[in-house]
Image 1 (cartoon, helix red, strand yellow):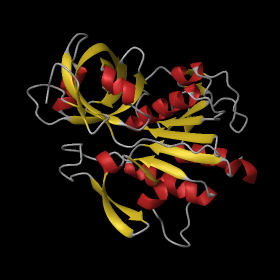
Image 2: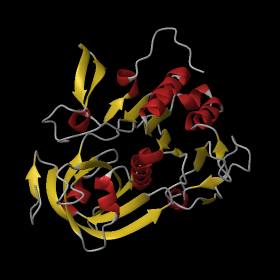
Image 3: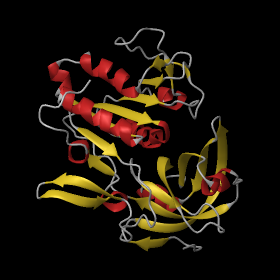
Image 4: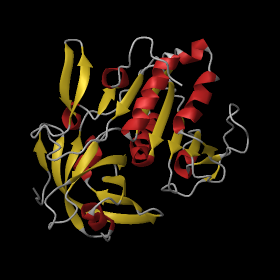
Length: 303
């Protein structure tokens, strides 16, 4: 589905021949690739993704969350960890190489105006949408008050640095942050079970629970959670949201074949006003209300 010019589909979905601008490699076979893709960059929102043809010899595309988008300069960034030959081929790309992408795809996050206290929780390859959302909030005219919590069991796909932003709900030695978010003045703390220096030793949900427990009822009434990561983490975050009575939006990571709603291979069971229904993660999501995807049971206890 390659073509020299972007082709419009459904109003905001485009097929572009994207050119590689830069490739950054990080430990754990993690990569950040910046692509020249003006149409996608112009229409992308936090939570949307692109379907990438990693190499002409590999017909199956790969869905990758957009980590950043610059509409003025016409580029997007994706972060990925090598899993299989497709992404390995993508990691081997050089500046100037071109590839076909489809995007931006999917419904993204929708922050609520009367809940400016935004808690962003990203785990592993679920970090990119949280970075995009943090930048979107930073650039918005509203007075958002974001806090980001990132988790990884392998080295982070950035060089953690000491934060100068005070987080009085944590011990002072839990001070490592993501430099990009720090430059945006977004308070950020890191969690891992891998004993990384300056990181909280535990799960992102443990760290998030500490912050939520430090909030007053008035503050919790103005708080909303946004999260992306492994399904087990999303389910735990949804339980945390129920525990503290705050709304939560989750971005699901599912295997996608077509990624444009045609194959129905990425369907998930979602609770709707009309009862349970199968929804396609690619076009009906990937962002859903956590309570509709992980509803829990009445009287269920969450540790």
